[in-house]
Image 1 (cartoon, one colour):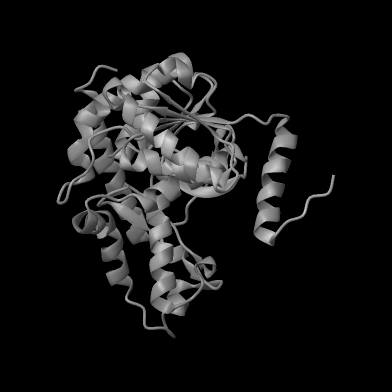
Image 2 (cartoon, helix red, strand yellow; image 1 turned 30 degrees about the vertical axis):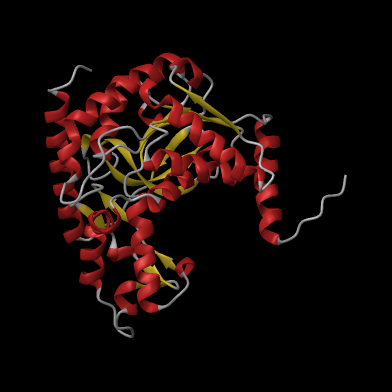
Length: 343
């Protein structure tokens, strides 16, 4: 059999999927999205379907939103046909349909509005995440739970405790999007290809996020040396980063493309067993700075089994102090939420 490729991108895409399928002796990958009719849920579904590495996407919705879920699948089928993509799209309100999922994404919850902090959503969203996590444990016990519901660090711990899963298999989107945003800001301000920017954000996905500027490099040059030759407004970039979500919400009502692509990137990394180091919310048991019993954004190695390892972090004194503060704030919020819901 001879296969011709129009460009190198098509070849690499085929190679990655083919090698993954051969290595894992399977061609069936199923992902379920709880909250599929929401802005984030449906955008993740479409982005993931277009990537053509998933065989089935389950569009789970509440009974009152089931017809809308069906409509989303009909519309997406039309779009996918234009690119010759055969991905099964299954609308449902029955948890039984998530059986066999490799990953179950929870996006359900009350969306953040302009002026709101993510922590303002904690208790009502925790009840949803708690109930859904119990259903996932019942119907998809071998899956990885991926949390996108805000406040994501708190919700990661809620999902962990409600599901009873191993902590390696419960992951929040954490600071992955924040890290991508900071990378983009550096790239655009100094007019350099984003692939040359290596930076990371840890801590809370919220006001207490911690940009690791001390270990940021641009073109392989540490940031502290790079700024000697380039006019770079570091404090302005960090301030913009922390306000990014609220800024977008104030302009268009919601964030959608950034979170959707970030989440799809995490899912693709897991199902293709890529072993990439990405910054997600993970439950800590002393792996970083001896911090325990709280989920925070930290760099991890992601595989098809979930978090393979939490990567050690080098921080300067200021970053370490900010990270401890993030842990304190998130732990306090988590304890408060757990005391108010029935795990």
